[in-house]
Length: 125
Image (tube, rainbow, N blue to C red; front, side):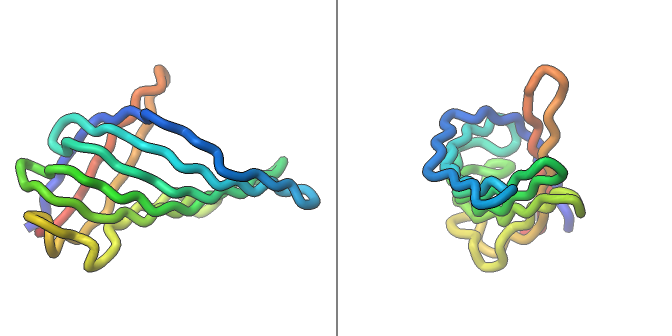
């Protein structure tokens, strides 16, 4: 059975670790932390790599969540990838633990005009 859990989140920390600009594309490594409230409650830590130039940008990231989802406590890892082909977040297979062991699915992040973030997790457990 497919479930949907929606939450808001804040970015609590944004810590650029390194930036390089060889030729025309800038590469950055960023560590960030988030706090989730709603059907997903808890925190996460993200390691992100970005590539940005005048005409395009892309990133990849892994996000380790320590959360409860619809009241089930545990955690899992989200694999992010984004670029010209869209933004994709999938639950890393086998990463679920605690009451979230066996979780599979995907997520979506939407930011409104005021900068508020909504996180929607579509999952099976």
